[in-house]
Length: 188
Image (cartoon, rainbow, N blue to C red; front, top):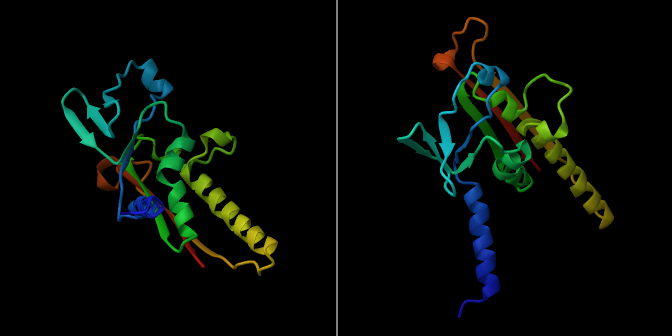
C-alpha cells in the first residue's frame, strides 16, 4: 500500500518539476487605452470561462498554459508566471521571461520596463517584482543561516534585459512586433 505522505511528496515534486518544463505560454489581454475608448474601438477578444483559452472574434480560439483577462492585476500575473521561477533560482535554475507581441500590446506595462518613476507598487511589472523577490530572498537566506549560527551564504546574481525593435520610423523588426526579454539567473 502506498503511503499518503510519499504520494503527496511525489505529487508536489511533479508539480514543482512541471514548472521547469522547457517553456510555458501565457496571454494577457490588456485593457483598452483611453484613446481607444474615445475612438470607439471595440474589444475583439474574450476569455473562455474556466479555460486557458482566448477567443479572437467569434471563431478563432487560441489555447495557452495561462490566460489573463482585462481585469487581471500585475501581482497575479507575477505570482502565476514568474514567482516560482525566481524561487527556482535559489535551487540553481536559471529563469527567462519573454514578452512578445505587436507594438501597443502591453509588453512594456506587463514587464514593467517603462520609465514612469511615479508608478504605484500595485502597477509594478514583472522585472521590478522579480528583482525585489530575488534580493529579498537572498536577504532571507542570509538571515536564516546567521540565526542558525552558520556562515551567511554567498550569492552571485546575473541579470540581462534586452528589448529588440526599431522605434520612431514605424518599422520594427518582425513587422511591427517588439521583443522584450528579461533573464534573471542565479548561481550559488
